[in-house]
Image 1: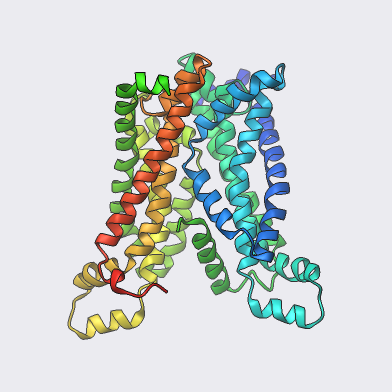
Image 2: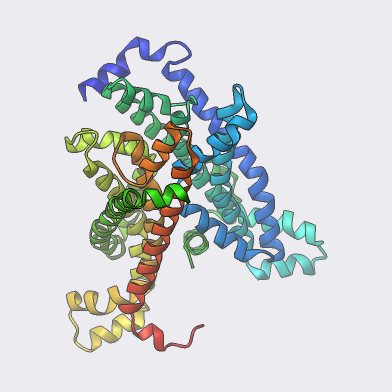
Length: 243
Length: 214
């Protein structure tokens, strides 16, 4: 505990390009770019699958299949295979982001899909009865109703990405994982534990931010009813649990 | 393939280590989650703090949790106990909600019927509520089992031997074969655990087999 405290309060830990603020910024940059890429792939695909009902089996298998693939092995394999093809500075960055995106897409996809899938058929029929086109039904009824689950998909993807971005330090990337890996290499437990604590705090803060944004964005017609939230959660669990 | 055949013994013993590190937390986690889930279901006001509290622990990235464990437990950084306790934390976090949902899914009429038959509260829990909640709990257990197998491999970065050691070894030597073998072995192990949980859950719920599938 003393070592941890000494490292955290040492001014040297907070300075320069290898200091805590710089590492936090790197960590967030990796995570944010991954999440944006994964959302650009996962959300449209999930909405399309939920809207048309096509490719449901794909979603379930993809989500469950990806969960059993060990992240660390995938990261190392990607760097070894893709790294030499790329060369230079991006030899480690691109494969790492690629693996992070690969991990982040399934939960986002599952959230978007389960959200649209779970929309009350009555609401969908009513929208169609009012003369809405298929596109309007999707964007004006299904997407707003699906927002809670789209957000919970993004939220669990964000957590996973922050955790896995920590591992990226082991393939010589920056981010907070550097403290964990370097601390171990130098037998400096204070640095390791300090880095670990920062990662944990960062993950919790990001989760909190997502929770708050989710509450602000979701239509008040959907949010306050406790039963509907519980039902949504159950639907999410059903979509995410292996069948 | 040639590498795999030459290192069968090594892969085998790493796999056994891996299985122990993944399964022990599953069993301990289940034993802890059942009473906690029961509390969350029985006393409504406990539900939110219990589920939010364990959920908060779930947000801590695995490598960070492994490293922080010695501060809590007083163990060495290389002690496999850190991995077991950390994964138990994740398992409990995942299962408390599942157990509470599973117990909540038991139809009210069944409980009333049991009470009317003179079954006391304790026996009713063990002989009626818990068995009927098994399918839901098993679904949660399967998620926990599969993610545990993946997370255990992260401990290789700290030098705790299991299938993840193949990743670090292979990466250090820029040699792909052990990494591929390790990935496949992890997936196989996850699949075996998954099937085992399905089999156990079927075995303890014989009445479900006679039902016509919905």
